[in-house]
Picture (spheres, one colour):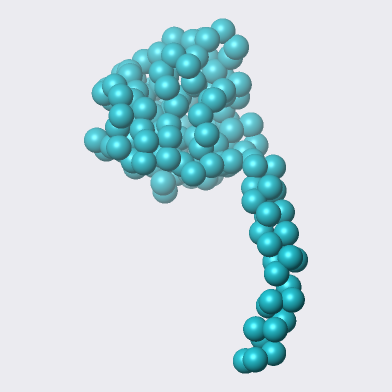
Length: 161
């Protein structure tokens, strides 16, 4: 399938099947590609829409240099901060490839948010948005609170050095 500046709208229809992954091991389902290779010849859009959850599984992704696949209306309820758990067919929108796409992650944009991938096992990889900075804020505040509360111990430790 070649996208050349258009919009692909799955409207809740899936092509291929995915699997759920936990810690890099497939825990349910088997993956199968359904749409062949995805070629991007110019900036294009993948709009999941609001009419259902779709799983799209491709063999590979071949973008022309400098092109972006902008992904809109993507909804995934799984926690992907640790990148340990992928989406679930029928519950989450999913974008799966039968090839490692780590070298192409800069060509994906989830409505302005960058992308990362989750290894599903068996050579399949799910592309998901990078967690939003707001999810990292509580972790940063927690670390700051620990440093602040332990500053006297840190000073005492440094004065002995």
